[in-house]
Length: 76
Image (cartoon, rainbow, N blue to C red):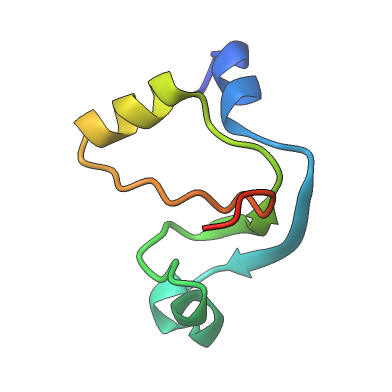
């Protein structure tokens, strides 16, 4: 996404609840509880409002990335 403002707008949301800040995700009980222990160190939203565009979801899938929506507006 670096240098691509449109991609940043498509893949981020300013509407979220809660944050998780992780320095050592593999050692964090919170990251295990939220199922993000394999993520890179950083700051993550617990839940968001909004969905990724279908084209981006397809691109992730083609790269072998499993996308799990954290959109709280959707009942799964």
